[in-house]
Length: 153
Image (tube, rainbow, N blue to C red; front, side, top):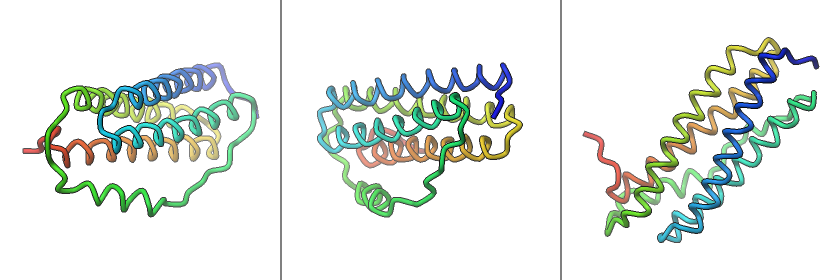
């Protein structure tokens, strides 16, 4: 597969975004006070590493296989957080707000990139990653809402 210079530039931007996400999640896992939040951050760092691997595969000229299975255990964990409000650790809240903003930005970068690729399979891969970025944001949002860190009025 031959990538245009524009496609390569987008992929390099996405690669840098994924590297930043991995660093943040790993660093924030070490800073989080709530063990539940620490586990979320570590798991999401692993998912971001998968995204980085996919981007690197595309940059090397191959199309990565997509794993489209829904993780039922993850959905059950998300649902179990509802109603678990309590003492809000301001450090954990700050970490969550930062990674939520990061996920919003990552989703926007993927959205723009998707429209710039001519290969439909690569567009599918990028779309799949974008959906996962949105799921990461939703998971952080639900955690925050369950802990009283994010109010929806």
